[in-house]
Image 1 (cartoon, rainbow, N blue to C red):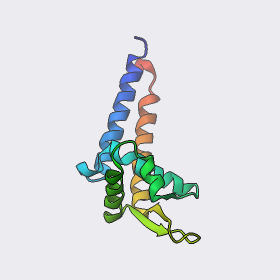
Image 2: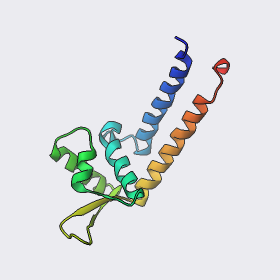
Image 3: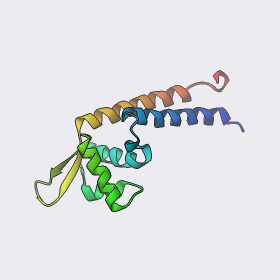
Image 4: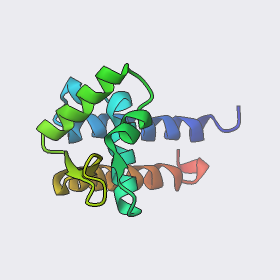
Length: 129
């Protein structure tokens, strides 16, 4: 297999990503990567593009869990200070979910560390591995 070293480096980078995510959120099992990644990243990305998600849209972004479980995850993130709910100014019935400055700081730091790790791992010439 010609690319075994490249794949090993990629595995290392992915493992770094997962471990750094866990450390970013205090290694709390309640913020397990798979369950919260789609929600938190989706919320931040939507906010950055100027199109924040409603509670319902954010729940649909998640890949697993019943509706109740998804709503509980959103509530937990709100209670922990990572997300805020904001009433839609045009339609007072709808609520948007937006990231807090703290969540943005945590996610940006995590992504920057991961990007640095990936670049370091993938820039090595094959002979240096």
